[in-house]
Length: 205
Ligand code: GSF
Image (tube, rainbow, N blue to C red; front, side, top):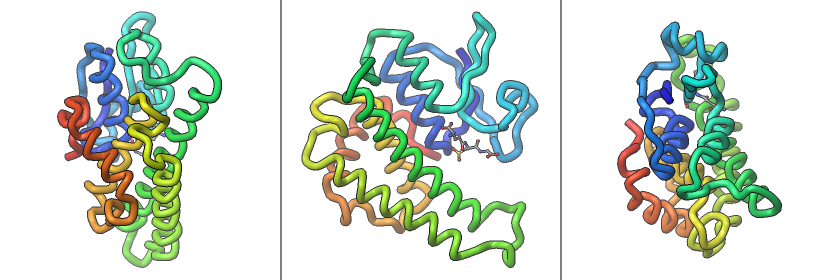
């Protein structure tokens, strides 16, 4: 398997953490999706990372949710997504929420800094709208976590992978958002996740 991605993308990090937790072999091809290499466009017409290329049968997978769902079926090591029922739903809800926080944060950042847009074309109202979603999402993460050891209970799951990658990306791109003071339970979870080699070895940057 070959993963096309960047070390700054939180969605790519989600996939890399899952690969590490499940102890799956892969090669990592780094690219800048904002100036996409032909290889990326050939495998994903949307020109976005992550994109996972499978050899047999030859196939390209995107986006991160499809990729991690597939990876979890490849090995029984560290099952991350429950097969059925409410437990599965809980993990999926966490992933939708945390991916949604990232989406809003990325839209805010692009509005502020994408070089295809001139300063007069930038809208602070749009940035504020997206950052409100980030704050509301963080509050919901904190409410859902309560005082549990992991997002959905006592077991580490994809929900924790997605939550950790989102919090790490906020630190990386929006260091002024002080989510630790506002939500100490998220800070505690994040510290615990940082101890795992899968997280320690995939710091954004
Ligand atoms: C989001 C991927 C994405 O936005 C997923 O894989 O879960 N829903 C998708 N990737 C960005 C890089 S990043 O900000 O993580 C990307 O590749 N953007 C390039 C573009 O042209 O939009």
